[in-house]
Image (cartoon, rainbow, N blue to C red):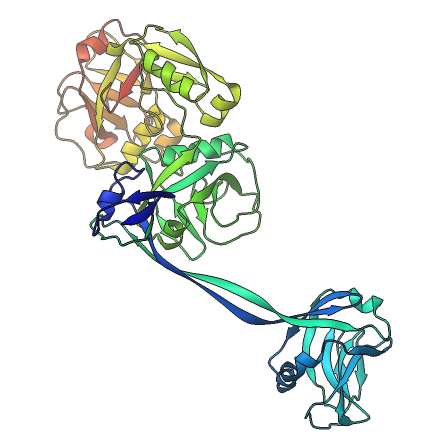
Length: 504
């Protein structure tokens, strides 16, 4: 059988599942997939009628009054009738016979109202009139309003007696109903002609380098998590501990991705299902170009595989040699600094924002010897402390982070590193430790004056933590799992230590 997967035709065995169809496609297990089962187009007549005259085209929106139904029944007689008279108040087209009842009352009409009238109070000479001004009148057919001119109102000023109605035709509407299933169940069986989309493709906004990078960071694991879902947008609130400047601002159309740049929720990412007006609090970060059905049906708690154009251009964590090939493929020239040998690990890249790097066409990659990048393990049992550590070290947005030595001294049972005093105010105390071990990484929490300080314990202790604080002032956040002797050799105040949670 043949199915369409991400826009390309694939031939599969009958009864194949999503798992088979997604082989080789961009997809992170556990994220949503859309399966388009069928579509149906419905074309129907609307209540808008195009009235073509010798002076131009008008559109009348018909109401649901009994008089409007009478006009529907005789509208085939409208072509070829003339404008019998045109005054300051009305333009009258006719005549034609109807069965409308005579009513000699006086009624009020608004400019552009369309209504029926009887010549000489005789329904055999019925006219369709259009009000050219607000006025009151007795036209023999009651108020008789059947609709209103909505388009081409300027034509009324050009009409003259004798001008013909050339044609009257209803405007048609076409609606398409998609029968779509959105699922993360890869055992779902496919059938002939199904269309599958495994991801959302996104074009980044090149006028918003920081907002685009925020999107790239949130999707760096291959997916974006949906933390909120409403009728008009999806949102991801996984990292709002950011400073985002005002950047490109535009109408938020369907598929627009924005990042809030100020106020409550700064850093929250939005993906729009409906069109919304411009807001200066929202930077344009990108536009969804594929995966609209996933966007429309995703619920809070789900995840969506994301592929961006361009992809992220950050070489940190690669060797200098690997970085050269990676950057060249993106059209970026590499300038090596620090340890420039092929096997050196890239610890820093300038500029590191993807859009800025692509615009410059050149980046500096600062290398360090492989044995100067040390492994740590971060404990996520206390999400606030773990977030703080990753944010301060840079591990929140790149694979190699850094710590700057605040104080070290030979024989001291710990080494401390600068933190962020402002962010450290949010470090709520954990349950006090009973004992810390050599290699434990800790933070000074808000209970102590030097909140935010980071430390590594070099000796076991029941009294003092990795930053020298007592148990109540210490949050244990993880463990240094590399060679401490290698770390401490020749280490001095203000030295920079590079760390990673993965393997280099």
